Image 1 (tube, rainbow, N blue to C red):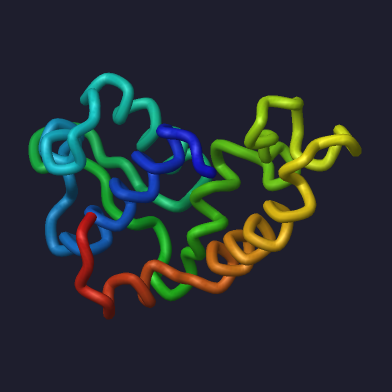
Image 2: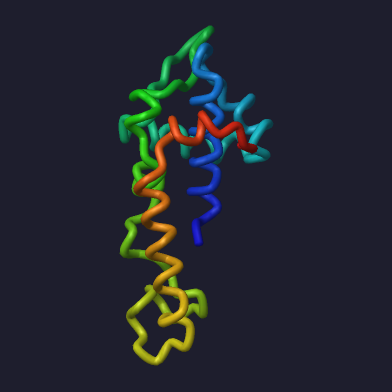
Amino acid sequence: MLSQTVEDALRATIYIARNASNPARVNDVAEVIHASPTYLAKILSQLARAGILESTRGKGGGFRLGVAPKDVRMCDVVAVFEAPEQRRCLLGHGLCGEDPSCTVHTRWSPIAKSMDCFLAGTTLADLLSNRTHT
């Protein structure tokens, strides 16, 4: 499962990539993805520091992709906010895999690995060619 921060970061990045002709203003992105503008500004700033986005100040400024969509994997966006090894246990037993008595781990582990493969193997370009919701 992904945190709300990661979900917002992914949705915002996809929106910005889809609308690449103009820099995206925080308030506009926040309205479209239904996020707090203040919190989204922090998320977008972190993505800019990581090089995924670029930020321009002033009139006509905003955020745009810092690299080509084919070079941004979903796991790159996730990694800005969460280390892959920090996946939480579904039952609240700390980090996934730490508690050998966890009744969910054996069944959840293949799903988590599948999700990791999806995030590593899916680029923004893949998603842009698939017109889906933001």
